[in-house]
Image (cartoon, rainbow, N blue to C red; front, top):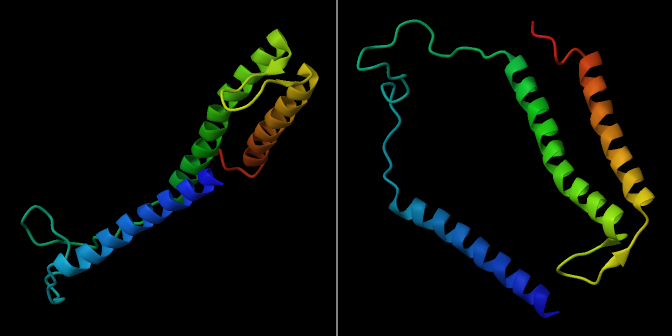
Length: 135
């Protein structure tokens, strides 16, 4: 129960700091009136010519999201492989926070198979939807 109280206190102090920072920024912030000059883009001291708002292709964002998904999945792969190696060598999952747990290596292998299946299925889905084609 003490652990939950510590976590709740930590969250409360974190929210207190965030709220305090927001209130302090509102109190100290300099405000100015909105004018037409303030809304103009700044281009090295000269007046802007042409339209300053350009469109970005959505393809950049799709590639970034796909990279992020596969990057996070590859980060999760490392601890899974460490646990699999530990189970194959000792037959137990040893943690510094709990007692060793006996588990069959086939269970870990099946979990890793599901993990790889989801990874490969995601890649095939993105490929078929044309998300990997640059247009």
